[in-house]
Image 1 (tube, rainbow, N blue to C red):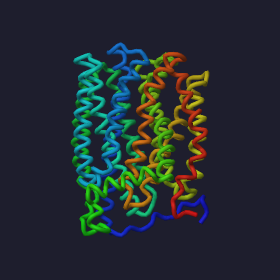
Image 2: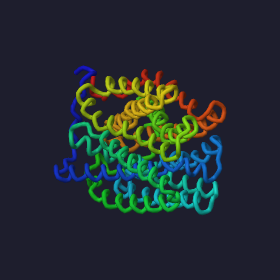
Image 3: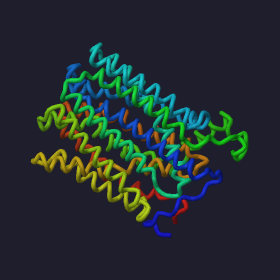
Image 4: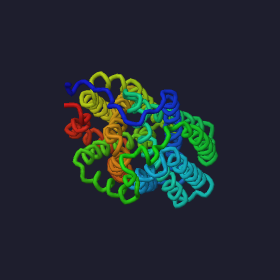
Length: 412
């Protein structure tokens, strides 16, 4: 079979009735959507937080770093936690922490007016979001295998739709002067309630009888599997690819609204709307991308989308015309749409090792969220926030060399 064609997903050994798989697919989509709603709501209010706390670009980058620290702390253990508790329970616990963190960050910005309170909230928000991220991706990959076709990008499209809704709500809240605290408290309640309901439909957690050997489920075996995954060249290279994909997406999440407010002199509401354009581009790419991936395979499709992201990010920063810059933002979103979800699918190609490998890839990938905000913030202090975003295409170009690593192992 040629590399241009994507083979069907291999069968699994634990059959689940089709109605249960469809219900799990819908439940995973709900969880992805609500997680995106939470993240999009926060990022759409970053300009208001920056204004309320009177932060420079560099100091804002350090505040945003708190969320990345929380997410990165979650990654090493979230895969093992998902193996022991199951994806559904892990998602519920993680989202509860996410909701608390979002509430604290919002109230810290608009009521306490404290950078420290906001940072503490963002650590909790990031930890909950990161743990939920690993678990919902593991569950999504399991559903994908049972369906026998590519659906992971559509789960991430659901995340993007949630982000679009969050950006829209954020723009509306900014337009009508709704405080950051009031806005984010409501979002936290909605996200937690919906996630608890959606995760009830997840696939049943395998029993010990279904395991290859009972001792494989022990904590010691789990730790050995985690360490073994860190020594696998393919897993590490996928992690490096996901790192750049996460930076490409995360830089827009963190800085796009602020960059257009500062560099193109837009209002806060218009800056939030520009971020919404980026997320719409990602949503379109993730929705249509499943068809492209099944037809042409990971290597060809990812090579094309990386090219689009390079072109789009360049136009967004360098275009002299506002409308052309907006087109660039849309292309950037379209090009950034598939890297992260396909990287997660590639890490989870073998179900028996999916949780630990996804956890390792997530640790590496989330390093972009750890280093990205302060890097772009400090660079923004020197060259302007908008021009700092040129780092994105410069990192993407060499990433083309990593794309063949994501080819499915059984694809010659």
